[in-house]
Image (cartoon, rainbow, N blue to C red; front, side):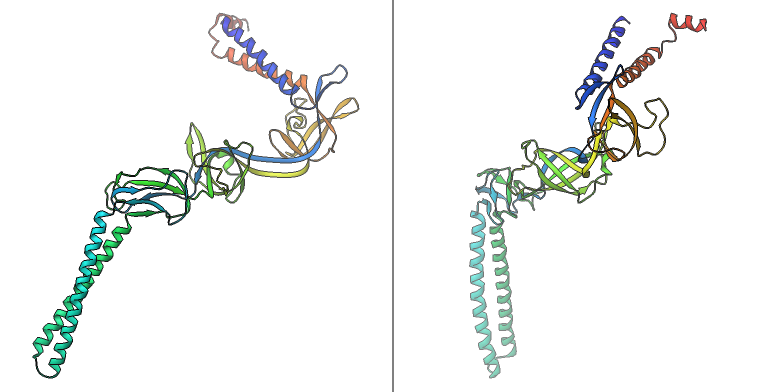
Length: 402
């Protein structure tokens, strides 16, 4: 119990000091009017009012392509490294072609033989047809030569198909870049044996990942409280941790229809497309996303803490129009209440639509605010002390006295 009391006292002192430093260090000046409370002064001035939504995100490529080979075999040539820029059609990998080249040579030889046999069969048929026309041979002999010609044609077609297939297999031993892009990751080295990406049960061996990094996306988790304020097509500003002094412009291209929950916080994934023509943004970089919700320029503003509901300072229940607020306006050496009409507001600043002019000075009573905050803190502490303390001796004696 003794430790609890000391802890309570220390807590009150720390909270009081924090509140005092907050008011003392938040701009403006402090002034006491007569023997009254000290006021923190704020000047009404024109500026830019802006509300935005911020979130952390990860940079990633829009189109990431995993490259695999249709053929299996040993890698003879692999001229690319991670970070290399390649154009569509550039060589990525060349496999050992010894066996496939032998198949091509054999198929070419078979085709040559089939073409020669077809030529012979065609000549034979032509001669037999002439003899048949003169009545020197029977119809059966002429038909047999026609059958031999048809067989030779079929053999040549099969030989040409076999050659075409062998050439396809030969071409599949050469892997080329499918798009313009950057090699993000390389998974194999020259001399390694890889499996086919179409005939292997495992899906084949990945050779490299390539992506066009001229445009990237940033995927960020937006709190469900803010997700209703944004829309597809809205502009966003990206600041990568690697380049804290640079800002990249982006545009929202997708808002996830389903939320994800991370550490009991409900988030919606938002994808922002960002131009990256200089290639500064790399895949996997951490970035901060800022989405402007509202922006109004050249408007009268003052700190939000200078505004209160009419009658709030006197302890009355707030009511009336929601756009009417009360401020303490400095007139001479006094601060007098003044009702004003306000517009947009956030935790820092509030837009003034009427009732004040640029250069007016508003006051915030530091002592009264500090005292009120202390009283609320003490009430919470007393409430926490009394909770569950009804079985103590002092509580029973007081109850009996009543």
